[in-house]
Image (cartoon, rainbow, N blue to C red; front, side, top):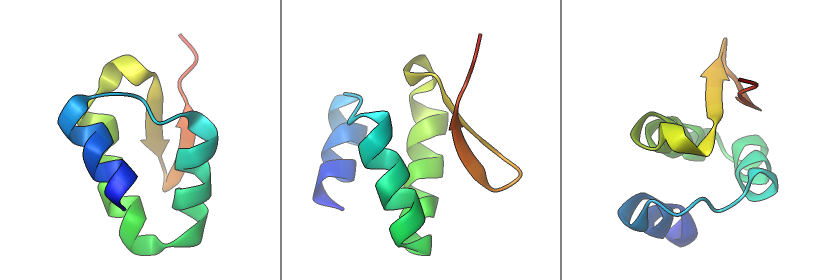
Length: 57
C-alpha cells in the first residue's frame, strides 16, 4: 500500500508486474490502482470490465 501511495504522489510507475500482483491480492487495492490509472494515463494502463491491463496504443 505504501508503494502505491508513493507512486501516486510522485507519479512514478511502479511497474506492471507489481500492479498486477497487487490487483490480484486485494480488492481494496483495486480501488487504489483504479485511481492511479486515472491519475497517470501516461503509464499506459487501463481498467476495462474489472480487468487491469496494459493499454496497447
